[in-house]
Image 1: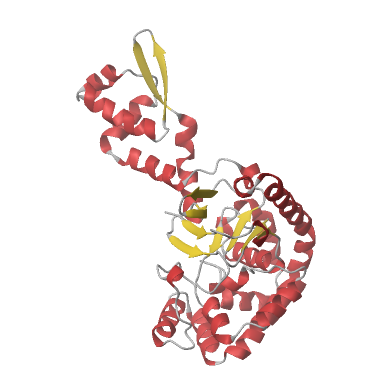
Image 2: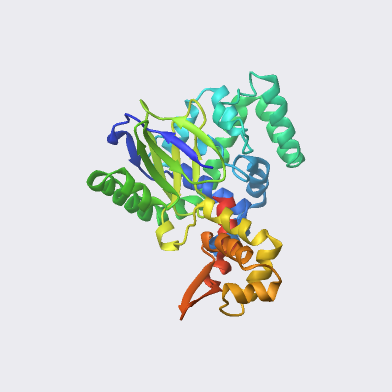
Length: 362
């Protein structure tokens, strides 16, 4: 499973790395709404939440469907600007149908990459938006109802909310992180120019890759979702973020330029496992017999015959189970004379939970 962006025929100069203040504000608001996703930001989220005026905190709570579970597409600008005001001006030029459709796409819908009509013009989309909001609480439901009834007034309300956040806490935060993000974008741009897109993508995140074959070229984003979009003839924007980890965002809705947002320090964090590897490891330890074998292998090195004797199964059966564990990278082996001894790799097993959490949050 992955998000695939077809870039066949797209000139290199149409792929850009650039920070965005609006995107980083969206990440900051998400971190305030879901601090459990962002343990590394605990000090910032705690201090910022405590300093919020009650009136601003109430408005943020009301509008949080736009950034809590997912991220409204307009919070990931395809053409980043120097200032938040300039990016908000760009939003003001967006038509109501597109803005409201983006603002109220608050779930990871299976129809997202196919295109969902704006709830301003489609009754089914309207009912869906209202049902999704109702599940999130009465304040959020009222917010969506007002958005659908008075889109122009609510767009102005959202702009004031984001401007008030900028004044209350984000302007100082942006001054601190924009230098780091600009430096990261320059570094990736230089890699793109000198060594090519594959090197630049890998440097941005181990979960990003370039695939090239006779059919064309594709950027592949390793996520637990499946989507595909064509970018040829358009452009692709990659946004570094200081507040986004462990999330790796990708917009791929029809009518939107593809945007990928990646953690600027993903390489420093290290150890980003492919989703397929995490899946293999969870499947490997889910089998009752393999769990029993792991109990032995956690205590010390064992040969195949020893494990067969201890668990009352044949040596070929043990070998098949060990093969699954080995394919998942969960075993270490050593040869002692004519025997091959197997043992559980504690460093890998200890990461299974955190790797799983990182994969589902990516």
